[in-house]
Length: 120
Image (cartoon, rainbow, N blue to C red; front, side, top):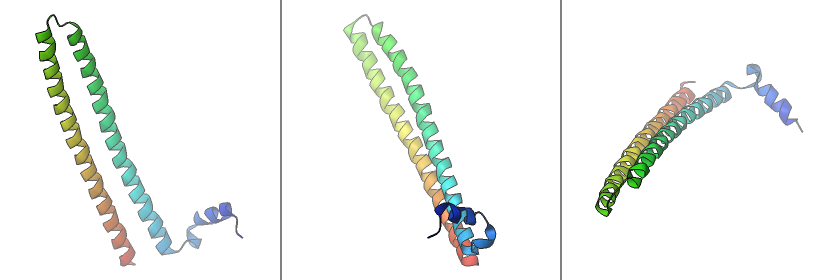
């Protein structure tokens, strides 16, 4: 039975890997790279959003602490909930846009892989 490490070492040498396997590995690598970049963008957007949201929440807490009447407190809460709804709606749209882009990148990579596989 061959050693797994030896098998992987042999894959590093182009002369022992058939052309179709090299193309397949290239397509998988390109797809994975694209997927990682897309998920990185989604994660960065989420981190940006939550950092901004935390700053806004801290500002609202300070403003709530300064309220001098129940009416002022309720008015500020209404403002807060309106801002929360708008922020989360905007973030949802941003994430869906990034997800749409990621899906398109995946389709593009699949089309390239299929074209490469049928070209040879």
